[in-house]
Image (cartoon, rainbow, N blue to C red; front, side, top):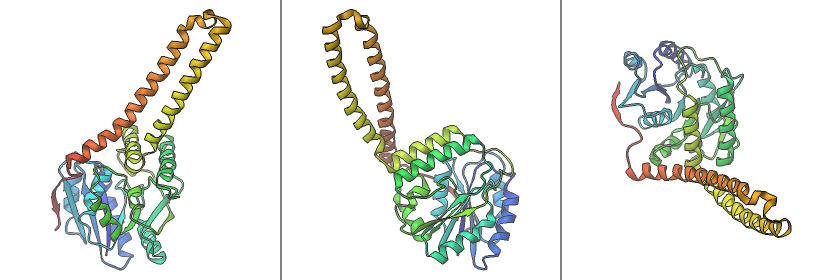
Length: 307
């Protein structure tokens, strides 16, 4: 069986066309399939439309109690899937459902555990593509996996990888990167990319920044190491500067640097800025520890429609 997991948040204008195109694409596979929609606390009519899909071939709807975010919503879908191959995609129709058979074919022909995708001729604005390139570069650095497009959620996973991700119980995570911890054979294939069919994107700059911090603090201690090295460099620089000031004062007197006032201000502002930056980075890690020790669930399912 093929399982398709789709998180939905305020996508009422896209859902009817998405369902029709999904059914057409999945029928070409010639095998059993299911479609698991996750209503992530939508405030429009998305949930009612999804409920009306129940009864169509293989459709189930997971209703969450509130908006938990894209990745937590997908995890809730992972917790109820039945298929041996699980495909994820967004509901905005930027990921063409017609590409699903290609993902399944690539996974089976190469016996891969994860099949990622690379969006061709992206239809996003520069305000989305530039941050996306930064996230891609950071993810490659952190995971050590040379995949090109980490931001495209149209991906396929073996059921074993999905089960391991669900069992991980991390409060917040970046699913494409998390999958690399549990998979050995991975590949990418090119897929088409379209403009959003209707509505507006739910990923603003704030959400992209939060996603980047989640990625950094979930999978790497690199920021803490940077602070360690930076602190050592600043300490050495401070000692060197002190020696320089002593030597210059002996040779040229106190008047050469305005009696040292501006030098002291420059040093003060620099160190205060570095201190607040360091506290911010450590705060991200402490915040994650706080969430983890509370053991609150990543998502709460109100009801699964279509069981």
